[in-house]
Structure formats: structure tokens, C-alpha cells
Length: 260
Image (cartoon, rainbow, N blue to C red; front, side):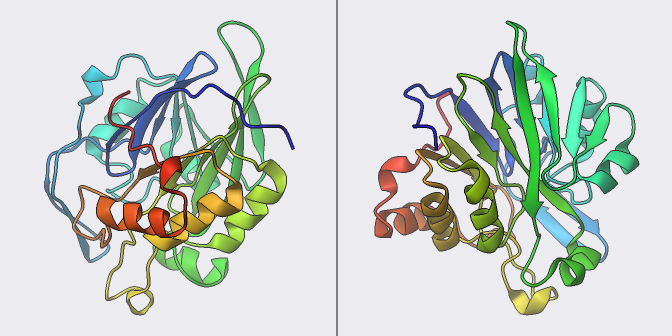
């Protein structure tokens, strides 16, 4: 395994699952959600957004690639986010999402990679990695919460980056770690979201203790938590994440992504 890189790049967390960062000369945006607070009902479930994004799409500057864990839920891709996709050269997402979105969207199956040209020469490799949006086997979960995907970014002389997407299962993190650990930066979707009508109220994305365990499994030098604030169905927030990482002896790995 390669050693951790000494330099870290800034990540700016904008609220919910949305973060922006520059890597290999390219600007990446995760799960764009910029709509105003309010209630959003889909498939009989109401999602309540409680806080605005820390930035508007026009504030971001050019975005080269959107890393979209899935396109079917308003708390991962909303109306403003969909409009933004039309201005971005490439959106990487699930195979089903690539078909639904069309245009510049490309679906990545598990372990499928795409190489992106860097402005200064060379390439960034983005690999789609497994994610399941709930407890239990894929065939039981995907008909309910849909297909999701995570991403690993690598490149010559670049740190290794993991973007978990709406994954709820540590067994998949172990598979990813077998191929890519140690990870320099992990953007971990957390927040322990729950709905009483889904899977008996079990979490459908990592809770705080699982996020800390994921960091340990990945040997992650830095963890930027996202997907824990701004929505009412997130049942654990920043204090819970900090407490879990402190209990695991990993508090020094946390980067809240506010100052980038």
C-alpha cells in the first residue's frame, strides 16, 4: 500500500450531501442540493429540508464533474441540482441514473472506472464502488430505496479519495478498503437517516459509530462528514459524529469542510 500523502486539498461542505473540492486540476461536486428549505414528498414519503445550502450554484464557479450517488431522492438531487447538471460536462452516477438523466450523465457499475483528463496532463481515475441504501441484501433494498453508488478517486501523485454515497453497510467498506486502503480523504455520508415505514426504522445510511468504524477500516487520514445536517430525517448530527470519533480515538481525523 502506498503511504499517505502529506498534502491535503480543501473540501467545502455545503450542507446535506453536497460538497465541492478541487482534485487533479478538476473541480468535483457531490450530490447537488440547493433548493430552499421546505417539504418534498415522493413515493408517499415526505422529506423536510430544514436549512439552506451554504452556497448557491452560481457561487460555485465552474464544476467539471458531479459525483452523484443517486438521482431518485430529493435530498441527494433536487430541482436546482438537476438544473446544474445541464451545465456540467460530466455527471457520474448509477447505471440506472445514467439512463434516466441522459445527456452528459454516465453510469458506473461496481468497480467500473473512467479516466478523466487532467488540465496539466495525466489522468484522474474515478472508480464506481459498491453502496447499498439500507440494511440487508441488495435485492431486498434496491426495490425500496433504489440503486446507489460510491466513488474512489485516484491518480499519479494524488491522494486517494473515497466518496461513500448513501451507503449503509460496513461490509462494503471492507471490500473497498481491500482494494484502495489507506485512503487519504473519505467523504462519509452519515446522519443515521431513518423512516418508520422503511425497514422497521433501521438506518438507511451510516450512523455516527459506523462512520467512525468506516474510517478505521479505510485507515482514512482525513474524514469529511457530509449528509448529517439540513434534513429532518437525519437523526444524528455533528455532536454525535464528534462523540463517536472521539470514542474511537479518531477525533483528529475529522475535517468539517467549512473553511475551504
